[in-house]
Image 1 (cartoon, protein in one colour):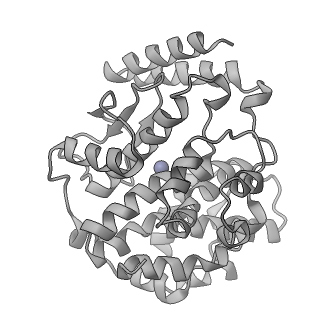
Image 2 (cartoon, rainbow, N blue to C red):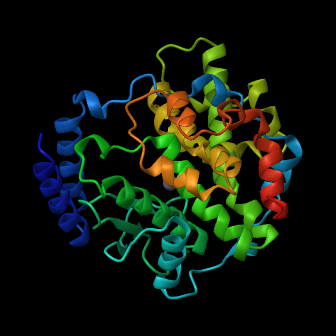
Length: 327
Ligand SMILES: [Zn+2]
């Protein structure tokens, strides 16, 4: 498939999203996937970080502190003009985001999340929940703009081999922007609250490990199977069982493989982001890297200490520093 054809379908998807036709937009997404999933330079087999990510350590005390935050304490709406946030990310990664459109659209935003969607070289979209329906915190907008910064840098060369992001690194890039902003402008409570999305995925990682230990077949997620497993002890000590069930219900019935690769591992890019907080150049390098190679080779290209970057047992210490604003 030619780049021009790919960009054309993305343009059609963009129009569908802007006109509110999410069903048509999903059809275009599927078409894009089908046309590219077999291309060798766009496939990144072997490029997962499973053993290291499964070692992600988050302590009971940090989980308790996050669980004790009441969402009302951090109920901070996007308060500046959108361009304030856009400029922040532009400066951070030295990229022009003037063509990126930020729009509000209805959708499934149960956990108050936004979404970034690629379109051609520069015309990406940030989709946020409608005003008044869900609150949008500034750091969430910064996170999604961070994704569009990656897409813009990645596509500046108009090279078809550069089209695809690597989910773990994509999240590292977006979290880098988000966490930089929060250390500069956020409060300690807001930073703790921001980690709730990470602990949710950490809970998922532990639940997947529990399923693996139980040798569950078929390989589909079942909350009732793992809710009492010892791997979730740290969460049962901090949350009610009802709350854990509510947090995990999105995953019910989905395959372990899909959950690991599309949900659990990517979010742990937050740990990588904190490993390179003082190195915007490394983050920019990640935006420009071809993703059809193993994770370790990609990290080796950064000329940093790959072993340290891949040490997910450091997660707890890094998150603590982030919360205290001392990272
Ligand atoms: Zn993200």
